[in-house]
Image (cartoon, rainbow, N blue to C red; front, side):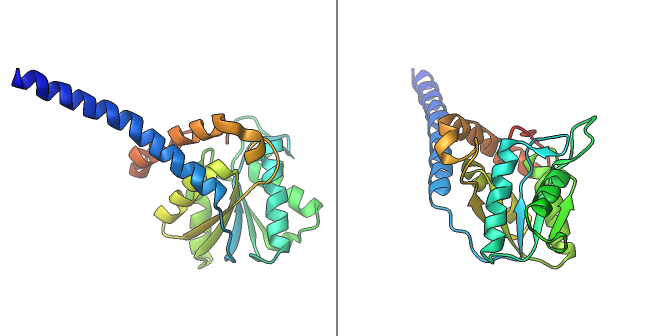
Length: 207
């Protein structure tokens, strides 16, 4: 009887964790997305998203538009665009972002394209390596609001100071993404803190 009660309590505890941890994580992601504070930094990083033969997708376009505004507000003097291409692509996410920024008035001297990374972790490793090479320590990440917590966490885990500015339009914005993006990002964040920190890359190219 004692063993049965112990097993039942253990099962109840595990079930509680299964419910509580995702809810806590989702709440933290939601709170972060609604209380972002961009600060003056060494570099602005535009996280990659899909591109179509050099044309930014709506998701990437919204991030680029926000990055342009932040740059013009003087929060950083350098912009990194980051992201590789898929097999068979003639362009990369980084190149699509780089070209869009130049076409929209940003001097090419102020932009660095880093055509690496097919997920958030690999992209973060790529731009952090470039930052450290250039002796830069503070990054202002531009991405979708619910993506901000994970993007900042990864940067901080790689020993750079990170804040985030959210895209204000497009499918990833708070007005348009609704809760499906929040639930997906909750799963991605939990995957990162449980296995991603140990060097296992989790594909998330939908963001």
